[in-house]
Every structure is written in C-alpha cells, then in structure tokens.
Image 1 (tube, rainbow, N blue to C red):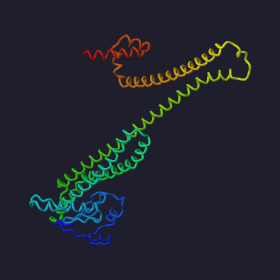
Image 2 (cartoon, helix red, strand yellow):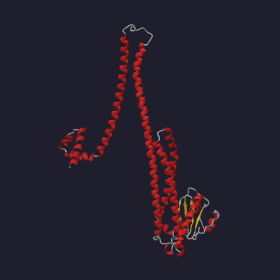
Image 3 (tube, one colour):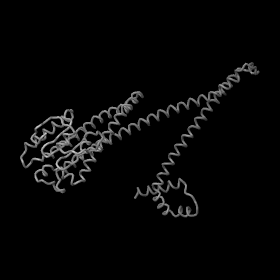
Image 4 (cartoon, rainbow, N blue to C red):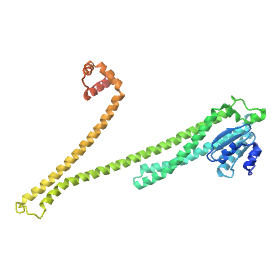
Length: 373
C-alpha cells in the first residue's frame, strides 16, 4: 500500500525479501516463528512490525503487510487505506508523515482487536458467573465451573499478550533514538536520521496506546479477580453445605446412640430366659419402658450439651484471637494508657498481672474520654 493509496497484491518469497529489501535472517525469524518477539523494530530505512496477525515492513512511502488474504488483515488494510485518503485530503501543513499514519492505524487496529476480544470474553464470563450465583442446582453450577475454566485460560492468555504489547511500547518510549528512527520521511528528505530529541509525535502516539493497553490490562485483571472471588464464594457455599450435612449426620448419630440404650434394655428383657418378672404388675413394664426412654433422652441431651460446649469454646477462641490481634495493633496505645495509670503501673512493676476486665475497662474508659472530649 503506497502513500497514494495504491494497492498491489502479490506473492513474495523469503529470498526475494532478502534480495529486494536487504532483510537479515533476524528479520525473517520475526515473521516465520510464531512465538518470536513482538513489537516495533526501527532500522535504517524501514520499520519492522509484528503484532498478532499484523506483520510487515513500513517504509517512508509504502507499507508491506503480510498474509493479506486473512479476514482480519484485510479489514486492517481497508482501515489503513481510509486513513491514508483522509490524510491526503487535508491541507499540506496539516498532513502527517505517511509512517506516522500507518503506525497509528496499526496500533489502533491492535487496540480494537484486544478490546473486542476482552469484551466478548467478559460477556461470556459474566453469563457463567451469574448462573453460578443465581442458579440453585448443583449440576448447573458444576457445568458453569467447567465452562469457566477455558474462559479463564483465554482471559489469562489475552492478559499475557496485552502485557507483551504494553511492555513493547513502554520500552520504545524509553528509547529516544528508536522513536526518532521512526521518522522515515525525515531520513528520506534530509539524508540523515532525525535528532534523538525530536520525537514528539511518535511519543504522543505511543503514550496514547500505551494508556489504552494499560487500561485493558486493568480490565482483564478485574475479570480474573471476579472469577477468583466467585470461585471462593462457591467454595464457601460448598463448605457450608458440607458442614450442614456433617451436622445432620452428627445429630442422627447422637440420636442412634441415645436410642441404643433403650434397645439394650429391650434386648435384655426380650431374651428367652425366665427372669421372674413376667408375672409381676403391668406397671413394671411401663416403668421399664419409661426409664429407658428417659435415659435415652438424657444421653441425647448430654451429647448435645457437649457439642454445644465444644462449639462455644471454638467461638470463644476465635473471639480471643480477634481480641489479641486488636491488642497487638494497639500495643503502643495500651502502653501509654498504663503509664498514665499509676495504680496499674505499680502493680505490674511489682510482678502483678492485668486481668482482661481491667484491660477492657481501661480501653473503654479511654475511648469514652476521647468521645466526650
């Protein structure tokens, strides 16, 4: 594509690239190797660029784009040609050099490509996250989690690619000579490279799209955090369900153990051995049954009380941990309060101890005094 909006489509081999444009093997590796470095590489009379599906060579009066038969590359070519026509239609003093128009169009196409990909992934991830939160069926949630895994891999891959493009522009912004080398028209007209300190237009272009890539990185990081938080909430929900099932199982076990006492008595009296109680008053049968049920109920209450005490002790340990953490955070403040209280200070110096209630009264009294002041 020339600066006059002339389009030439042809096939070219690697050997012709080397012979015609003087490319070195390192240039060819940038295009032939899929995982080679990406970015903008200024040389003497051209700029080599490689970003995602956009690969090619930029000169002062034309640009060579590879793989033009791909739909994404063809869309970029049409966008570039419209930008060239728009630049040619303005007054001469408002025209930008051709290489700057091409660079800006290249970075804009790359930013739009990343942003559209991020938008599609964000929509798909949001749908799955909403299903995980709103749906009640475990099978539906499990299916959403399985779908969320490849989406998370895609968003992580996008984040790596955007970060690579961002670092490329950031590195170029710190190299004055490379930014000045992007002025190919100046080199063509003056016969010498542009001064290293004259790169204002290139710097503005790089800073603009560097900010867009940084914003896109923040968006992808936010999406990743949403996935992690939703997964954590789902894990907490599963833990709560598991805890409820375990507590129900424990209740049933305690009930079974309690009833086993009555079953033991029934087993003793149900033996085919004469005990002499068969001919006694019928009240004795009712008494034995009642005593067995009362003992079973008592065993259940004792087990329930033991479980409640264990839960209360665990809750108290958690409260003590939180209190201890608060005390550690306000340790210097407590030290100052103790220094102001002579009675407590003398007692501590003499080897005495400070009770929890005294510490709470000390902190509460100081807080009340601060509020009243």
